[in-house]
Length: 347
Image (tube, rainbow, N blue to C red; front, side):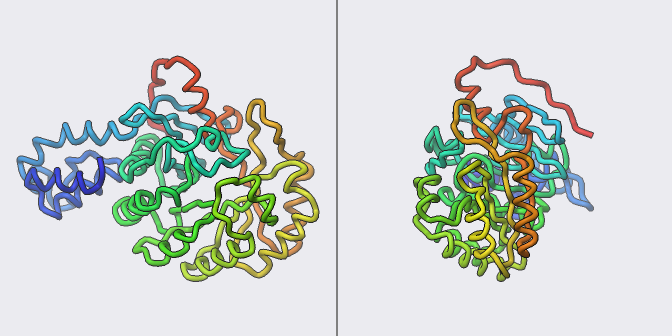
């Protein structure tokens, strides 16, 4: 189901634009579709033909993203394995502090060497309503005030659907624009389109190294844009929207954690409106990459902060359940389906 199809379906039932907007807003906010306005109950607001169709419409929207299983982490997060209508699976993550990470593709074409999702290749795009449905499911479990597009897939490769989802979440979903975070490996279309949007999200840049040749090796199918050019493009966007670029840097032992890289990173982002998010590698079974020691991670943070580069460590949520992006899906494909774990409202 696409957004245009949803609007047409409601229009065919006799819903006026004000009715369609109310129904879509209620759905995105995790409320019953029959929710009325502050002044009028549904039976005095929605046409009878629309009210009679709401149970089937609710079932169809629920089917856009169904939680197959949830895997709580000790950090307050929970990784969700989600079924799509065609039988494909994606992952969402309930984040600590009222956030959710959503997927924009089944698989990914960038083929990052340190990412399980990239190992599967791209299988299909996720529609804008399937993206929003992940947020709706999350809201049925806990409050959601932030949505990050850092799950399975490269959002820039599904740009129209992702931007439509961002617009829906920012206009109807009650999510602050700076709390909608668009993550990308770097694509010129992103820097062209985002400044023109009604809802301008925050931007996260998956950089991982300052060396163009190493970046091409680690991210084989990312656009061939130099790290310096990416830094300049993202800096321009950050200044336009007024919130800093989040630079994603997956820490790989003996690959991008050396002193030479740190000096180059400090030089690249000195004076720029950015925060560096260091992400210690979440080991994959059988993979040859490793994360640096805890002591080395502390040294890196201290060094970059001493150079005037705001730096934070952002551990992948739920690492204790071995649920790095794509890992739950990969295990589910290799394992016969088990009964769905009952979901309960979180406190």
